[in-house]
Amino acid sequence: MDTLIHLIAVYGLLVVFVSVLLDQGGIPVPAYPPIILTAALATDQGKSVWPIILVASLAAVIADWLWYIGGRRLGAKLLRLMCRLSLSPDSCVLMDGEAPPLILDVRSEPQRTQTGWIPGSVFVQTVAEAPLMPREEVIVYCDCPNEASAAVLARALNKRGFKRVRPLAGGFAAWKSDGQLVSFE
Image (cartoon, rainbow, N blue to C red; front, side, top):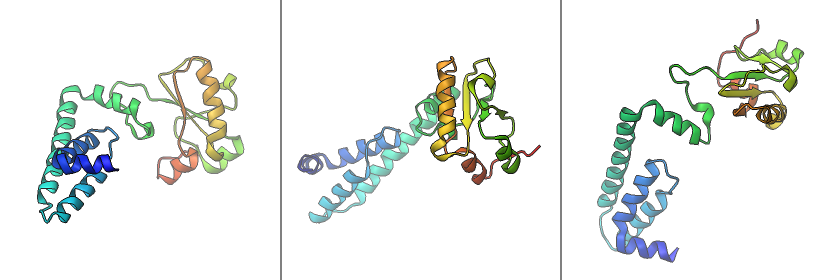
């Protein structure tokens, strides 16, 4: 903590600028602690906090502008990279020309009949029932705690050559509660 306070005392606005720029750029560097410490030191010394606010805003605008330029020049490549690196790939959208993922429902028949299913999903109980052609992406879902059945099937499919296989975060309940389409026919 003493090192951070010393850095801020000497390079306050530069530390704020770099931390906000990196944070807005997508690198997990905390921006709030340097801003708060710099503002506290400025207030203790009777200085204005407006330069801190302006530097932080400038860094955020520059980072956003760089994302905009990157999106304009690289477009789909940048989006695919971010989806691969993302901790939440469920939020990524399909790009034009990409095949939709294979969606596997591992719930029991009575459960599917009662609650419905995700449109286009394939009903399987075991790896042997899964379509044999590996796809670019496979999403497996169930209604069990922590997606246990889906995780077991996902691991087995991964061993059979399917590259990007993952359980649906939150399972069918999360899908339904998000207001997504549900089929009954």
